[in-house]
Length: 370
Image (cartoon, rainbow, N blue to C red):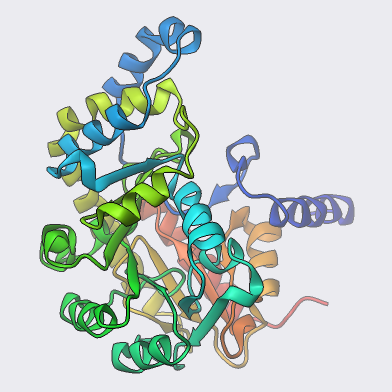
């Protein structure tokens, strides 16, 4: 690679780091964004394109119909469901407008804290190096600071670690006596090995202080359609969130996906099996890299601590991009000790994952380029 080519790649890397999407417009392998490569099936795109004129020219449906469509898909009453333009819209309403005091473990998905006024947020540090949530300590801190909303992302982002269902139920029971809603973000639960046993969806009616958030972009591979939902048996909380929505907050393309999604459930479950298989093989390949601490994943991405002798995360990410055309996320800036020593790598296909593992092994085993 010439000096001119290298400089151009450096410039492109810097530009992409400042973006929040649109990666498909650039010619690199995206191991940063987290989605299911095996879904939706091709017939969905044929259904969508066959209706393109109607979808562009007509108004979409509103919230009551959208809630019914999601309810059919997840077998829940529509009155328990609020559908958002991605989970981000729902997070903005709750964090930014409803929560008086919000507590969230860190590191985690930044948007819950970012969407809230700074003075309304309490960050609860997960203990390194395990990064496991101690729900008893978390509950005690939520009660001490008088939080009215607590958030747990499970599996967590960026750590890819699941919080056991029994722990979450214990947390719910502790918070219930203190008028604290618990939001459990299950956006990546479909990639967990025991998804049906670990999800709280079937327990929703038993806990009025529980709300489940789910971004459908991740598991269903529909990032561009922007669909997320909240599930809760707390009618008052659901109505408060609904009041924050625009009347037509989803477009006709997202509506069409929800109309047809029940037809694809068998293919969806099979796609999640493929994602898990690819991820598990990727985990084994990363574990073979000397000195790399690899956390066993429950989601479709893998969290790693770089060896002490290796370059820091931003430099490793830069070299992967410049030298190998691979883009990953480093964790510098996350609220955690030694954040620059950690990286998060999305699992893609077996072939792509193997290429990343080989490139990463070469980089962490070599000296930093000056």
